[in-house]
Image (cartoon, rainbow, N blue to C red; front, side):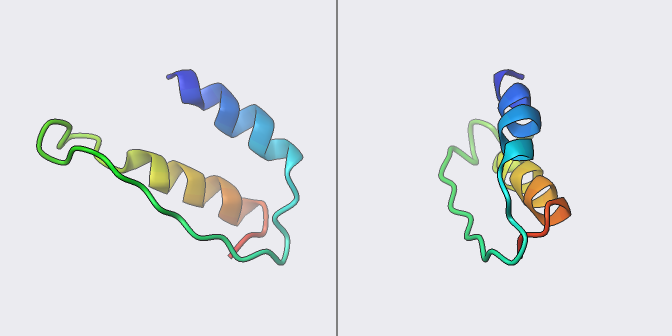
Length: 53
């Protein structure tokens, strides 16, 4: 997807060690039921692996 590059390239350059992170997402759970809020999980995995909580 278009966001995959952002997640892998841009977030690799951010230091999350010891940082608290909040996630907020909106969307259409009816129209996009198969992938509604998938980006929240992608972000959480990347930020957690970089030391964020």
